[in-house]
Length: 280
Image (cartoon, rainbow, N blue to C red; front, top):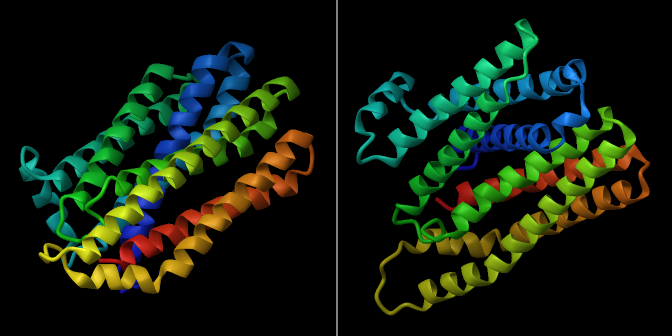
């Protein structure tokens, strides 16, 4: 089953990572853009912006591989008023268009268009919400909970903040410390909120198992019990990655530890997403 769901794993993580990177870039330019001249802003913006566009585009392509007939993706656009899938596809396309325009302006016209980046960020966050709604509006017990949105938006924060810490290496020392510290605070607070929400999620799963009236299929609940060890190990890996990046940022040195910590965070998000889709 995991192999069959890889297109969705790749799609959701790439798009959410792309949105997180775009949001992070927008916030840096919005609050710290005055610390950079035009050339520095473009140089700082261009590479991650292109990465965000490529990641988002590859994510959309991966999503079509999940369909038995990829051209059916166009039929999904016909039900915007009633289908979360249609809304997700449309907002993903609008997000990619906005970020793509910003990338073209930066690449060919040497212009940093902050309004377009902010628009792309808003569209991207709406897309992630629609993405979560697709899974919460199902009959699968392990998905029909607010935990799905926590996991999806949590990935946006984790990957976006990790990208911010990595990107800060090209800034001046003062600005680099500010960006890295802010990004680390975002990822730490996001992880804490997700962990606190897990108590509600586990309570919900327990009630679903003990319910006298069976309203959910038992297979996802049984699968979750089998994957509980991997699920917990993924959380541990996420916290280890945050700790490694935090130690490096605090010491203002050891870039290899920043890279290692960031890779641990991303690997943890991949494992959490594998567990998520294996529960279908």
